[in-house]
Amino acid sequence: MSTPPASLWRDRRFLRFWAGQSASQFGDRISELALPLIAVGALHASAQQVAWLTALAWAPNLLAVVLGAWVDHRARKRRLMVLADLARACLLLTLPLASLWGDVTLTQLYAVALLTGAAGVLFNTAYPPFFARLVPRSSYVDANSRLSASRSASYIAGPAVGGTLVQAVTAPVAVIADALTFLVSAALVGRIRMDEPAAARDPDAAQGERAGGALLRRAGEGVAFIVRHPVLRASLGCATTVNFFTFLTGTGMTVLFADRVLGLSPGAIGLAFGIGSTGALLGAVLAPVMSRWIGLGHSIAAGSVLFPAPLALAAAAGGPPWARAGALGLAEFLAGIGVMLFDVNLNSLQAAVIPDAMRSRVAGAYSTVNYGVRPLGALAGGVLATVVGLRATLVVAAAGGALSVLWLLASPVPRVRSLAPGEPLLAAVGGGAAEADIRSRRTSGPRQRGYPRGRNAVTEEWGVTVPSTDVVELILKDHRRMEDLFRTMRNAEADRAAALGEFAQLLIAHACAEEDEVYPALRRYKNVEGDDVDHSVHEHHEANEALLALLEVEDTGSEEWDEKLEELVTAVNHHADEEERTLLNDARENVAADRRSQLGEAFRAARAKYLDERRGDVDKVRELVASAGE
Image (tube, rainbow, N blue to C red):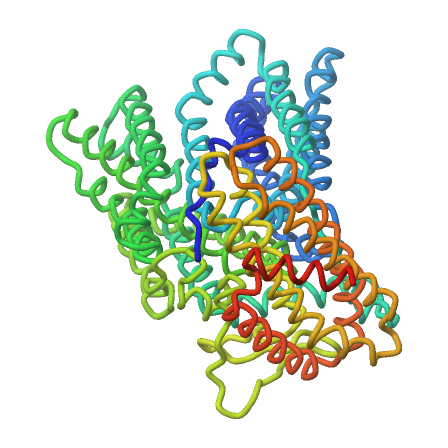
């Protein structure tokens, strides 16, 4: 039984995060205007020096693949995000302080741009695993829609507010506003309470591998995972291609085209870009609707075409000034809708298919490639415009960008309908929920490759190695599904009874399968503590008692139901956290990959049997609790 997604409007943790990100996005628009104005106005920087300022802000993304590998082995991603926000606030505040003393220098400005960029990369690589634990998978698209809508809204109002502040109080002082938004974000994110699993111990590092070598190896594993994964490989190829071609005509080149070829006034150009920002806001709102209407994969494919293709409309602009301005405005509007259809739905799909242990590494590799190609596109655009002219460059950008959809058409992406737990294709590419585990298509057993000494067993699926029957991965998937159901049960507007019914069946089947197939096998390994196994069995009993207490409360809207729910949450989360830190980490380090795969097969079969027997019905849970007390 599946339950409808809980309303994010009732999720206080998400609302805090959304508020913090919205404030931070508006602050970013102020600094994007204020920092260049400090360089140009106060320091009389040349065009080349301003270009260096922009380059330094983007440069840390080139090392994101390594930083992502480091972040993946940190236990508290939320803490890293808070530290990144505080660092950016402190760095920005040095500018008004230096201005007060009359000592702002170009070197300081470069340092602030570089270090705030690095802090931004830290935040962005810690963000994916945080987001995946904050938001239920069924709400990924809606959550990304809200976050993207705030970003789009910041592009509408942010520059105007920033310009007013700069004019009223000077650029260095205006930066204070951005620093304050980072403090707001840090305060709100810091107040979000969530259970974050302990970082997995690295067996190679434990055996003496040098820290630098281990970091590079993990970074390489992140890149290899993308290359071998059909969804991630295709989406990165598509995003990189579309970004390269759209950056041929980035904002600067489009402004140059509008000014010199179309002959538009600055006011008309500004209006056209403003219309484009409203298109992006509309696209962010429409993305979940389109996903439900034509399917998630089709929405991504449509966005990959609609984002670059309108550049051809701008290139074809002619006639009187109002017609030329209208064509440019319409092109920006349609491109804004397209980029949000692409980003919102693709970000949600990626969040669903990337395993927890790989999220930051994949995000880092994405940033290195996806952002690294942008300056290359800008440089190529300058050369192309010089050779063939601005209008032809726009046509090349539109055609080349639209062809990026070919990456998707050759992949499983267009066939993904939704992120629902029962989506079979999603399960096949590594994004299925616990009840839709990956079904191997192998004919002669699991094919292992690429992971030395104690890595997860992997199988060939859609031409990619993904975790399949590894017992550790299967147990972790169940833990994640339980967290999703807790969020639904906490939502007063959701079908709490249905969510509890699904949770009860999953919890009992999961625990019984562990005790039948997994725990006895782990006892045989000398490096696995028998006391940890006994403690886990005891915690299963405690969770069963808490489950029974909740099942026996009839009114799901009562205070008693809420009280018993929190007791169940505490018991289950405590057990999951301890199991992940002890038994599962021990299994990773001491149990060979093929043996973990065998245990996973046995665990999955036992779990399916108990689900079929409906061991989570209240009468059977009552019998289970009574028998444990004898």
